[in-house]
Length: 192
Image (cartoon, rainbow, N blue to C red; front, side, top):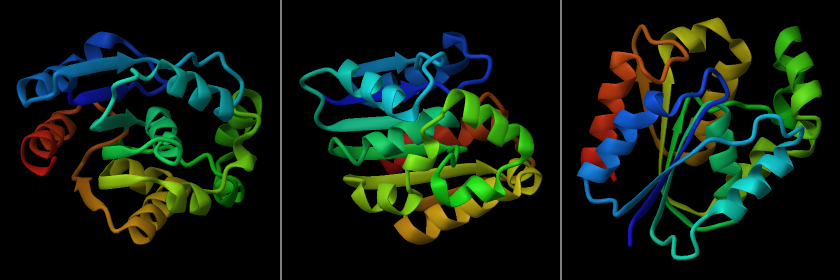
């Protein structure tokens, strides 16, 4: 049974926002498509990842993980602990030790309060531990220009992994943006 899990981002999460993505997986051969919203009140990356892994169905191979924003970070870390056939990272958050100094004051304050252990996670180690057959990274051109730390993380992620990279013109941190939705549909239909 092919399983795809769609991990929501932290901002304004509604299941409806991700429904087109769930539907696209269903229409393209995934038998089991699960929408997963992490418990954002959890105050550690480790607990977010552990909770997610505990929720995985027992028969989950081949497994496709799709994550947006902080959901993408959880998916990436999870890929170092379970085998993932397809990993799709949309605007992946980079709350890793290497990017601590590049975070804006607001992002660092939020991370210190909500992801207190983020400095325990190395981007380099996380990437090297990832057990992924096929990886795809998507990011919006506008968000890359807006946040230098995010651009550095995406550039490093591309460089370290060699995974397919899609930059979305004139698009910000908005999974529901038409350019994002179009690119996601294309990835699901033609890449995976």
